[in-house]
Amino acid sequence: MIPYSSLIKSYQDGVNIHRKKALKIGMPILLILLILMVVSFMLYNQYILFMILTYIVPILIFSCILIVLLVGLYGLEKPFYTLLVSGLIKHLALTENRWLNYTAFDKEKALFIAGGLYPRGASKTTRFKIDWVGENALVNCLCFTEIFTQTDKSRVVYFKGLYIVISSSNKDYFQIRTKGKERHRHVKLNRTKRPDKTVIFTNERPVPKTALSLYNDLSSQYSKVAVSGIPGAIHVSIEPFFAFKQKPTLTPEQIDSVHKELVKAIAIADHISATFSD
Image (cartoon, rainbow, N blue to C red):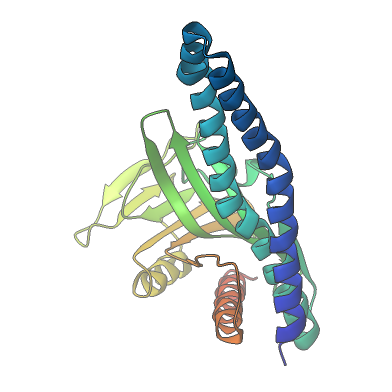
């Protein structure tokens, strides 16, 4: 049985800790803002008042707003992945008697570059990564990742969902997708578009039937799927997946929803691993 009480308490304690940290940063800024306003009116110097209102006050106000936004996002996101999801993975590992290595906010980038599915120079933010031993006795992994580029004026999201890497004896480069282009630098793939709008990239040999079958199966369940084969591994991206909005409080029903999504993600990864095992 899922330990609802301990997970809720752990998550709530984490949220409270981040709120207190934000207050420690935000309160001095607000105090400085108040002192400046009081001093400017006491001196009643138009030049000083103008400088404070024009330059210093907007900077301090912006800083306060930024802190509030960061607390609202990261203050909930960090305990969600480091405490709640981590706790659920530990529970799954115990109940299923298997090794599941969980890492929150993993920094690895090369993993996604190797798959050649998305721009090499794009930013990559991984909320969590799970490693496990697959059917072929090799370590595989799944990640919940966002891949994007961002400027001052725009943000382009290439991918936000479940990214799975399965170790296999595959020897060829290939890709199956509906949108985008292959991003390998060291190999040139030939592009073929099928009547159903599926785009296939191949090197010399045809795409394995197991890969086509997997792609068709997942595409019938999810709106955007891509499969990439590289020597020694199969990369699969699926979206949307794990679309949860973090909240300050948790209920057993919300924990159940997260738990079901994690079970589903691991089941998909196990299925892919079994499909490409030797």
